[in-house]
Length: 171
Image (cartoon, rainbow, N blue to C red):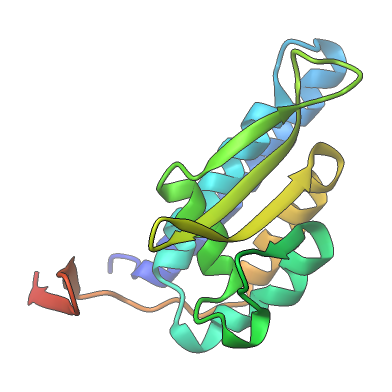
């Protein structure tokens, strides 16, 4: 029997964390392994794939983890109570749609010191989240541990976003 999506997503999470640990160990020997770059790639993978299969009822479960590691700012008269998206969706969308930038490490300007992510609504940034290099690894660990607890949805339909709603088609 083939594994379902749930098993495949969990295996992806496990392999992503193994890869990050290997790079971190190698960096102790050779500082040219670029563990911050690998951590950002790991974060990208952990947010894009698993969150795509995350049941809606589990989305808010990640808000506390994100606020513990990110400096989250609501902009342009936006506040948390009126904000429709969960923070995990904001972080996922910002990475998926290129709404992020790297800030240099003040002690080592050629290295990444923090990542700034934002979400735009009607051509205005409405939320900004920043995580520094030191918090990145621990956040990834907490995120992966939380993701391991989730029973992911098996998707049997393709979602095709339209202007006002999602249309589905069977595969």
